[in-house]
Each structure stands twice: as structure tokens, then as C-alpha cells.
Amino acid sequence: MDESKTTEKRITKKDLRSVWWRSTFLMGAWNYERMQNIGWAFSMVPAIKRLYKTKEDRAAAMHRHLEFFNTHPYAAAPILGVEIALEEQRANGADINDEAISGVKVGMMGPLAGVGDPVFWGTLRPVVGAFAASLALSRNVLGPILFFVIWNVLRMSFTWFTQNMGYTQGTNITQNLGGGMMQKITQGASILGMFIMGVLVPRWTTMNFPVVISSVKNEAKNVVDLSTLADAANRGKVSAAQLRNMYDQIISGKQVDMFKVTTLQDVFNTLIPGLMPLLLMFGVLWLLRHKVSPILIIVGLFVLGIAGYGTHILG
Image 1: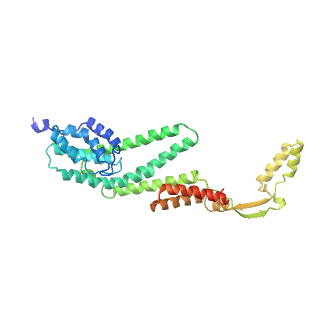
Image 2 (image 1 turned 135 degrees about the horizontal axis):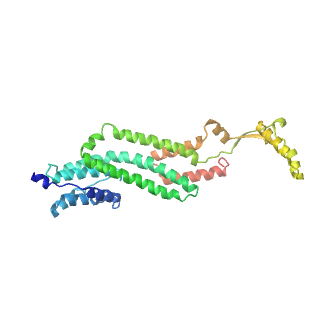
Image 3 (image 1 turned 60 degrees about the horizontal axis):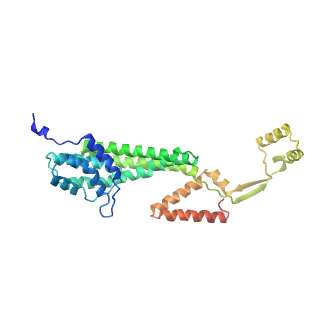
């Protein structure tokens, strides 16, 4: 029997599950100096214990993984998988030094952070949150429950799958992530997120401009005759024929009011329904891109709404 095979150190499924679960707490000890380094080292503990048996080797491995690390917390999973594979190869005698292990980690954390932000923060969370919020607004208790369940299922499924992919493919994953694949994922997520927000904004944002643009008196022949019906109602003798007659007049296109009033909102609606909420959203996005504080934007919207209502521009 080949002796080298009997002494080969291998990561088990249990180790991978332990690393995966510990990575949930990646942000638990975030600090300004090295950011996610403590959470990263905490996640690597099961793999290090499996691969290194002496106290000195384990301490050296922990020291390697306490260096600066910062990426999207969910996108750290494939990097964990790759690092476990590298540590496994090193523990079995491969010529992999500390700089190589740190270099792979540092080289992957930047690009993957750029993917995680638009996919999770910019797309999945707004979509799941909007779905749950719509249930909550209808007083359905399942709204917050479904948000918790769906979000965590998506998050944990992604981290488990990508961690195993990183471990299985090792450094080859960097080649697979090349060739523009990450750019395509980022672009696709951004387009999907904008599409979803474009659908939700007109539905959830209500803006009304009651400013009267014109008021034209309708001709008497084009106005529904309500006086006869009102007299009959005052006498308590409204007949079905009178109601049917009024209904027929409205269906035929006659106006109920003596004056046809056109407001600013009517003009906007004739252009594109939901136009002003959409423009408001683009305005907010523009401010965010120019590093304006979200708190300041919220306060500004409050002031704008109160001032608009006070001047009767908004209603």
C-alpha cells in the first residue's frame, strides 16, 4: 500500500459544514484596522484543526489568516473554499508559501465584493423586501416571516454552494471567474434590480398635483340631468327607471359636473402614468451617486412634501 495515501490529510464534509456555519458570523468582530480578519480566522478554525496537528503549525496558520480581509460577507464563501483547498495542499506537502495564500485571498476579495453588492444589496434584498412589505401592508403576518425565511434560504444556499465550488476547483475558480463572467453577472443583476424598482416605484409612491390648469364649463346638453333625480330623492320616490336613465346618460359620455377641471396631475397622467414618482426615484439615485447622505435625502423629502402640501402644489 502506498504509505503517502494513508497519511494524506483530507478535509471532511463535517469540516466544510463547520466552516460554512461559522462564516455566518464573519462580521461579528469587524474592526477598523483589519475589518473581517477575526471572523475569517474564526471560520477557518475547523479546517486548520483538521490539517495541522501541532500547536506551532496551528498557530502559524491562524497568524496567516488574521491579516486584513474585507469583502462582501456572502461573497467570502468561494474565497473560503479556495483557501481551504490551498491549506489542504500545503498540509500535504505542496510548495505553497504564506504569500501565495494571502495573495489569492487579497486578489479575490475585491472583484467578488463588486459582484456581491449589486446582486444581494441591489437586487435580491429589494425584491424579497418588496414582496414581504406588500404582504405586511395588507396586514398579513406572513410578511416578516417570509422575508426572514426566504432571505436566509437564499443567503445560506449561495454560501454553501459557492464555498464547495471554491474548495472543489481551488485556484482554477479564478480562471472560471475571469473572461467577463463577473461583469456579466453584475450587469445582469443591475438591470434586473432597476426593472424591479421601476415596477415597484409607481405602485408604492403616490404623488398628486392638484393645481388647476383649466376649468371649462360644459354645455347643458352634455351634462347629466341630476335635478330631476334629486327632486325625486327628496320626495322619497326614486324609481328604477330614473336610475336607469341616469346610468344611460353617464355611459353615453355625458359629464356629471358642470365644469370640466384639468389639473396638473391630469397632464402628467396623459404623458406617462407614474411619471413623477419615477423622476423622483431617479433624482434620489442621482443624489446617492453624488455621495449625499441618505438621512439628508429623507429629511429633504419630508420638507419637500410638507412645503408642497402647504403651497397646494402637492395634495
